[in-house]
Image (cartoon, rainbow, N blue to C red; front, side, top):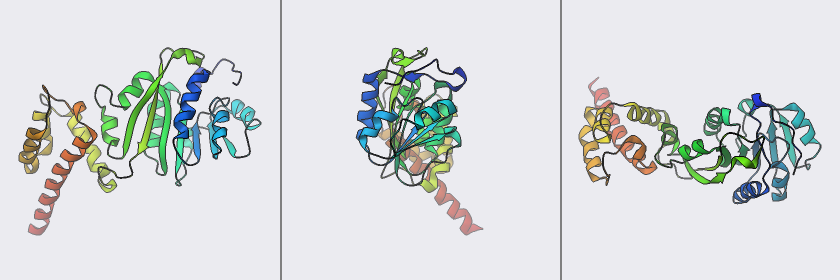
Length: 269
């Protein structure tokens, strides 16, 4: 295991130093295929053991001091790239993303990852509560719901704060993200779908039975009410209670009705 100095606060450096946690991450990565892109390689706590998987690794590290040191320790199949991951253009060819993310930059990094094409799976170490929310434990967030048709999110475990040096103020969670081979919504409708999810989460009303018909509008209102009647909700369901499949189903109803209305208007015009 590498030797660590105090992490730089402005870079959110909390180095993973627990061998058991490292082993868990390597095991998860071993269940994937393809080249690896690592976010925040640091001193190589994950980079060096991942080399045993015999796969090409691109290790990105924002701290030039650590990047220079790591460059002298890696195998020829591993490339160390000094720089900010947010400015790194991910390859279009299939690859896997791995990283111990700085807690204060998690949302920005996740958005960068989710907007990129090419990668097939990600194994990420995040702040515990963030990992739970992204995996929809206790209900989905808007961000998760907006990306669910194209990605599956799973909580793979909890890593205690004591596993890091310096020790952060909270535990971490292991989040795995898998790109769906068969998306639930066509990519061409991604913008429309994300707007729909936003409107539902921010819509007024007491529960989905009031919110969804209002957001759907007149053309789809009756069909949405019929769909709601077929669901087996308990109590007063909220947007967070919808599953990935339910989001895709109700969006398909609204989108189909809206498209039919647009076609009628075009013919009249």
